[in-house]
Length: 109
Image (cartoon, rainbow, N blue to C red; front, side, top):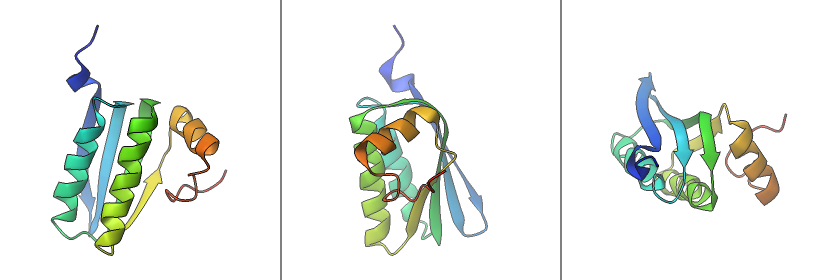
């Protein structure tokens, strides 16, 4: 069994004033706090926008979805637009089932 702390890789980069957070692996109860930490650090640097690249997520559950919603709320409170990009099939299905695709800024394909 793998170590829950290693189930996700969270990396950040900047494109001018936009911060991009890239997620790879599993966004679940054990790993979702890592996303919260990354978002908090990014928002502390006052980006114009935040993009979460979720194309490499292999799994997401309700705790992962909650982490994404909290990230959106934190960004909104600071007047920063946050959206998801390159949504994995797994996350896409979860967003469809919950009706949160538009809330998290994912275009309908």
